[in-house]
Length: 218
Length: 212
Image 1: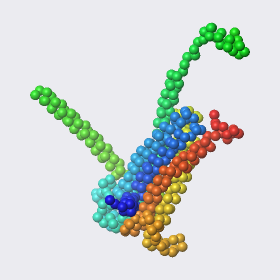
Image 2: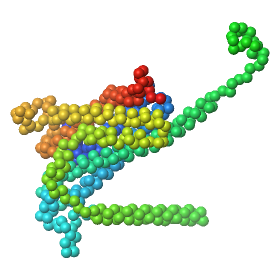
Image 3: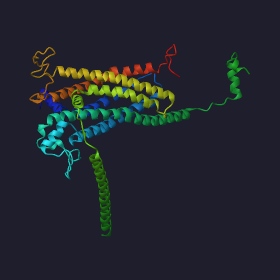
Image 4: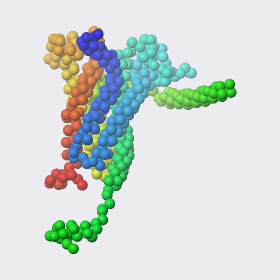
């Protein structure tokens, strides 16, 4: 069995290898974890707030739950997709820098289509990182790609968390609120009792027991 | 015998129809893929020619940690989310008001604590992840101890300065998430409640009553 110190060293190595060269991936993964934890706290905050009425809680608790689910799913799907698109744009050379283009020219890859020879740069199947002498440009390329990845992750997270999620959760929570209020009203109606009638004999008995009650004078 | 032939025929019919379905699905996904590739290939290439933008993009990749991401998300959230909640016609006016107040409170509380804790934890991890050759603010060589190298990865891993910075950001964020498991309940939730109650209270009423 491995010692705790050995396990800790392995953990550090895993973090370094997974996220050291891929900050965009780190932002997506830690973002998802962060949303899960903060959503739990926000649900607790509504549940234990006495100043929010029962009707409002009926709306706000599902809103929080919908918020959590929509946040986590849309954050991961949208942010990851936008980040993947950013990576693709850089890897295929759709987005590039003069240094990257100079490297491609040096490698013998036409950067513009000329005289019937089509340039592969910017095409879906082209991948700069697969080139044999990629090491020559890897430092500049990685710096540029990491920047684009982080930028794309930011754009994806803004779109998912601040636009898509609030719209989805409001729609979902409003439906839940309507259903819940309808159920509450139905329950109240079921519990209602018809006022019982009173006979003249019963009324006279009560009146006799409360001779000074103005409401019960015959 | 007749029954066996019938069952066998049925099996064959099912498998033929499933083959037909999967063929149709493959054909549709192939067409979508081809169209997607054509659209992608038709987008013109963009070259960032100015060093200013290339440097800015590189700096964003190096310096933008989860703390900065949280801050940017919070600021943009304040500009969009209360507006979306205020225009939610599916609920009554009073619920809408409470919803807007809660959204603002949640963003403010979450952003303040989220940014501060992430930044603090990343800084703390940085202080305990020193490596040979690191210098202090005065330019003096830092003496390595067990404590200040506690989070430094072993071996040659720490040699790439950019990857090492990202490693510290990632580890700091993970530690921050653990810390936030407690602060979410101890700070975030009460602060959200406090700000929500402050926002839904009517300042016109001397007794601090709620808006009707």
